[in-house]
Image 1: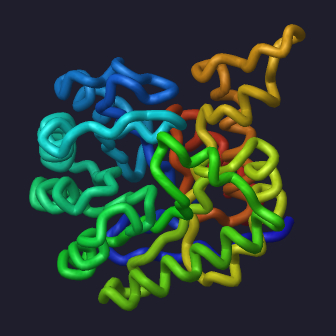
Image 2: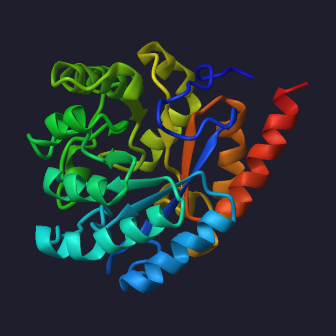
Length: 285
């Protein structure tokens, strides 16, 4: 089995010596999988505590849907959604990540207890984000990104998706380091589904080891994504509904753990922890 890279330790984050499980808490009305279920902060907090009890290493709290075509909320609304959730989960002992593209959201989230910034734009959407991350000293997930949700799929054009995504991520990492972010605090994410077709996603997964050239820990988010729904389509061609894609997600989690991915971002935590335990047993012998 080809490994992506050794399991890097990231300062100030959990270091269990295995692939980490990042549990998703979408405080949104319109996320593709669970939009509206956890829009109420109390429901989001309860869900985050459930994920923590199931074994999540990090809880990723986001107040903006990034599904294709989604419309961005205003900053005050995003803050209203996420800050109470971040604060309560951090107070309960969770390692909380704030999933945002805005420095104006990341800053109060860090003040409320977030220990990681997960920016799906990799610092490209807000010119103040990289400076904020550098000043705060928190780790930063830098995802490959070509544009906002409303038009990102129009930018899903590549000659060689893997080499181009690696090159563009390399540029994003250079920009982060140039802004003062410590290299050992940077985590990469190839951005499956963001300005990428289903076929692009599969090509990235098949050639994941090539990202080792960047020498950074990697998070991969495949949970319930549409390319799995297409793979599992019914006889009439209808994609499998999002909540019925968890078994396929768990299968991919197993593969990713065997390949040494630093973290997986998932909706179903217990199944992913079980899959990683199996992978760890195989890798240890």
